[in-house]
Image (cartoon, rainbow, N blue to C red; front, side):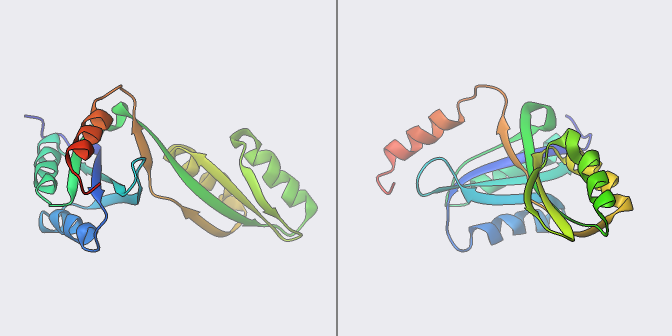
Length: 181
């Protein structure tokens, strides 16, 4: 058995009910497992939501978690993946203040390799958006340390599996057999 702790992404496809997220969070809380990141949004199939949860623990613990999550009535499918099995991005917004045109140009040149989208460019600050890896977001934050970062926010992780798996086929089969969808 693998008891080495590493990062895992747990993906849950479920009906969206008011108490589901609370009950799923309790499963982690009762086992004293810290949720590093959580995202919930409508899935690619109508009336179904996709919950993405990132944890750092052993494969054995994550496997047991997914089995327990599967017992929730609204849950259709649960699976987990190690970091190397998925493509991951996050979105980040940076509001960078500046006091001179020279400083503004320096900021633009520093961020140019990352190709951030400029959402708003004023006389005193610029708001940038990136959609990239956590490492890229952290690298940009490091570059901006010497400037006035007026605001910063990053989204939760979103992820897709690299391999051609059977998850969507399994989900579609489930939906075909359940007349409530």
